[in-house]
Amino acid sequence: MINKIAPSVEEALAGIQDGATVLIGGFGTAGIPNELIDGLIAQGAKDLTVVNNNAGNGEAGLAALLRAGRVRKIICSFPRQADSQVFDGLYRAGKLELELVPQGNLAERIRAAGAGIGAFFCPTGYGTQLAGGRETREINGKHYVLEYPIHGDVALIKAEAGDRWGNLVYRKAARNFGPVMAMAAQRTIATVHEVVELGALNPEHIVTPGIFVNKIVQIDRVATQAGGFKKAA
Amino acid sequence: MDYPRRTKDQLAARVAQDIFDGAVVNLGIGQPTLVANHLPAGMEVVLHSENGLLGMGSAPAEGQEDYDLINAGKQPVTLRPGGAFFHHADSFAMMRGGHLDICVLGAFQVSATGDLANWSTGAPDAIPAVGGAMDLAIGAKQTWVMMDLLTKQNESKLVEKCSYPLTGLACVKRVYTDLATFACTEQGLQLIDAVDGLSREALERIVGLPISPAQ
Image (cartoon, rainbow over all chains, first blue to last red; front, side, top):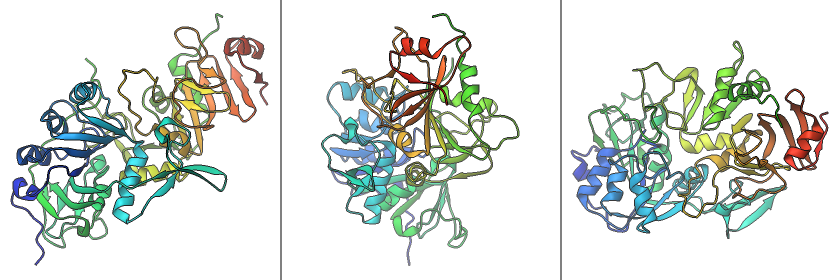
């Protein structure tokens, strides 16, 4: 019998090693698997490379993981936000390595890893300093930059509902990086607010098929908090 | 140099005037988001947000915010009937794959031939952040820029060659400013329109570059 439902965050995260590359879903605060990140802090793995669109909001979640000194390098598209003070401080102090990747390249490099693509030519960033030093090619009169996949040892993502085979559906724009990150890691762990019986998810609506998911953990819903922008006073 | 400048809302309305019924449009963070307020009633324009929305609607009523439903600036929005959610790789495929009709971006500088600089001022102590700017700039069928023509120091933001780090090469088709609207072409700037009383010759003096007449 296939049963990917883990009884606890702790069990779902067991075995993550020092030096791991951890793909963390989310865009701003939407889709950030805060409970898994808290679990990773408790689990203790260090010297991590973290891949996320941003670099933490406020003091909780990814910001707390950074604050705990567990992250050596972050690969992201947009670290600088109104509430990215934890990242800002560590980066300025030289305690955190940053690889800045245009957002679409980030998504496509992760997708490529999951799809078994060795590398791909992408027009984004051609002629800019973010493409500096990399191989380029002209194809049918258009310029492209060679981009390599981003593989994860682990992906931590947040979904809305799932079943024991690991099939997932998401909620609104909290989907963001979840589906591609699920594909790109050796081990994918998803939180869901609802665990349903096999067959309860409409097969036409399943977004991430269970083949891409190793563990799911049920977490009670907490409304996603605002983050990433300056709130009007 | 005392011309009747377009206000931010007038500028947004000027951009909106060129958006066509049925267009799929991405409005960049900041000033471009104002364009949504000026689309003519009765016209259907589908707004794309890079974090995975098509058919983005206006801000929710106070108390109705859902922070799983946000825009690229991470602010709460709504979804219109017919709207859809999708993941990031699909969202950026919509850009790079040439499926978006129009993308409107802000800019620090635009060159006469349409090079765009809008992601970094190159300040050594700044924390770099690019987001979707580079993908948007080169992906949409048409990339338009919306900005003040002059900096606070009265320097033209339309330049022969960008001094700030580039976002994309030869990607901007039109530049809408508080004083005039321009097309960027391989041959350089072309005038589309200007505020009352501002001649092409006067604009050439302000910008410091040749500007070919409107066609």
